[in-house]
Image (cartoon, rainbow over all chains, first blue to last red; front, side, top):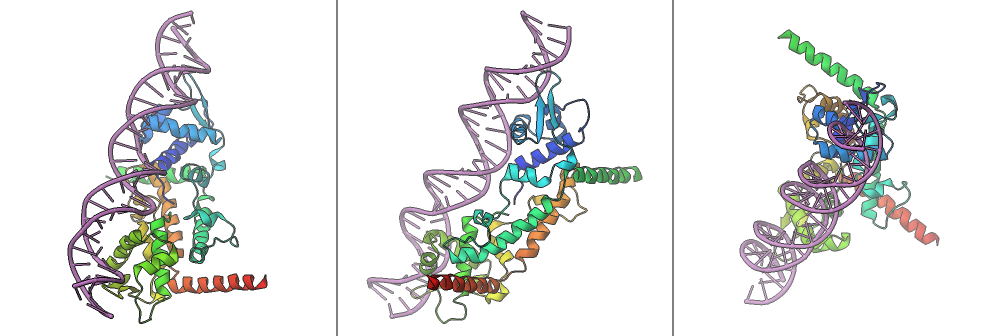
Length: 151
Length: 151
DNA sequence: TATTTTTCCTATCAAATTAGTCTGATTTTA
DNA sequence: TAAAATCAGACTAATTTGATAGGAAAAATA
């Protein structure tokens, strides 16, 4: 599983929206883009994908923008990764159930491993919510400020 | 981590050579290619990479070919995957030690996850040898024949 | 109602990656 | 010396990636 710029941008955008979840104000794309160093027009496309998948919703017109449709603790990292990057299986065949095998014995001898890999990755990314990542970022921020003040 | 055709071909070629390890005869590319449905000229390129990395060696001229430089139980799946597909980390930054962080707090909040993912994948592919995969393929072959005879 | 601000939609594009092909040189053995 | 094999490098077509461009549509506000 590789995380492309597109995926990286999507994750950062959602994390940014997560920090604004529950507020009156919706967040315009230009703000998400500026604050996270994401090309605005590229982010527009990504937000449409996220909206299509029901992760975010939007308000058009003046003082419009985006907002999360679900609370950050109800959005799994794995959801977004799969949505933007596609399957996490190293080869497509590894999505099939274990018994269902192709006509290629060599491929099948490896398949068991790829199934394991996919399961291990899923086990991680499907057990992390954006609330977890928010928490992690707040800790990093504290640590960073702590360091700055020490100078 | 995605396995491309190139990687898939490399793994199959090595597995095929593994079944011929310790024999007098070296195996010509054309045989590896034919037996595994791999384009011959493409496989030539791949074998050069494997040779450059010291996985296989070759004998030129008539009745030449390739052979494993190490016993199958000394070749890790992870070695070949990394050689052909590159890093297993979902993002390059996740190769850095945990403390070393970029200037981007959001990226760092995610990084911890990518480090975990890479570790989980490594834990699988660096603990499987080609001897293990040979064993697995032999079992699949038996099961396949058993099924055929039952008809 | 006109203007502005925003999302929404579609087309286009350049660079990189993937999956090869093609041509031919070099080496070795029979 | 002819044949069989590896070795080397250029080339190519298709796909993916990472955008950019232009404008339509909607909504708030003056």
